[in-house]
Image (cartoon, rainbow, N blue to C red; front, side):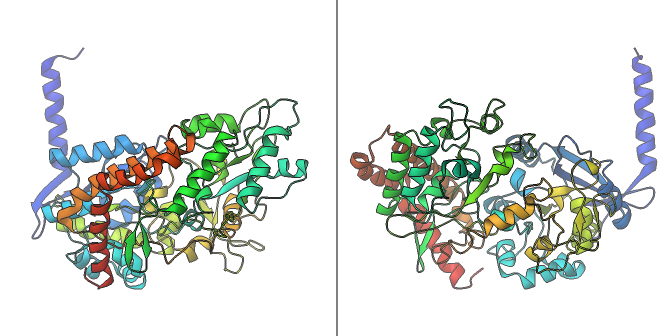
Length: 555
């Protein structure tokens, strides 16, 4: 064991080296600027990092460091959104926050309310002039994309943080149903097109032994609460179920002309819940669908004894079955289009834009030099070259240029890049989801994807083709533009509380009606009254005021 004297000596040596390596001067505009001995600007950055990633040694980190003369000092957290957000909040509350928050939307992005709060407090720096002076590609994206500019610009006209823009076509339509086509073929059935045809198919899955093992072990329909679109998919045959833009939390808002409304108190919604309850009562929806976690759903899908899942309403098949399964079971599932209900309705939800939350925020801890270096780095990511490198890594390692015969995801589009697949890609070569800025639909559709949609490498094409079945079933007249509508900042706390309370109330009552612990015929009126006592009237009032300002062009 070292002596105390040797520890002190060692510490002094470290401090001396640090002093030699870095110099600090007060920038003319901003916090004190810190530079390394080789002239790089030091920027502290808070970012998520998965177990396969070391941001200090990451290939893209080195490339950006050299290209923009940045010495990154990473403060990392996990991809687990709960702990990640908590650590982010602790850093802000303690005052020991970084110069740059560089986040991932589905992990720990800031909300509108958080951006407004940090902007008005002076923690988040306005970016609009910095962009205008240093970032032509970002400025072009803002000028050419109305929705992106609206969601980026706070009511006071400032841009305090930027969201990513990642056009994910298949994510635009998340309320999908994946059904076992092999079972349909064995039973001589076609994909259902109506609510009653679905009932017939699920009954056959339950009673006619489609997996052929002589056991009644088939599960006609299941899901897990974390990933489920069960209620939304089935509700689409009765009422428009809004997806919203809350990173997993369904919206409560629709439009009737210019009036902000909610569908969850309507007779159509009640009829939808009654239908789902009827499937549940008949054992056609698995009881575990509303309680099990994602791992349990995967265990069902990968059951080594037999294929037991008939249909699963989730975004994509990899949520419930291992892609590339040895027995090929993952290839058995195909998307079922939106169902038509008894009144002829056939809706699906629209999730647009798919990348919500605010992920790039410079704080008042950033020197002017750090601000310029960071925004120039981000501006580079807004180019096609920057996208390819940030998302996939260096050319020849994470991606290659297209070759003869390569076909883009959208076959009508000229292919631009070819991602290298699977095990051939080394670890820690890209920033992945952290760098998905300006990932437009045109750019995404220009990637080379194999034509075999059931291969692991062909997954993107499988999802692309499946989504075509849903496009056009969204009701854009009822769609509420949530990311573009900024509520009054002074009401953000009240609005967040109302949103949480109402979502909880609706979810609990829906589940009670579906499972039968509450009778929907005798309990519906009390449920509707409870919506108002939980704050629905006030919630709609606040949203109406915000929407009216949005429509009037007041930002």
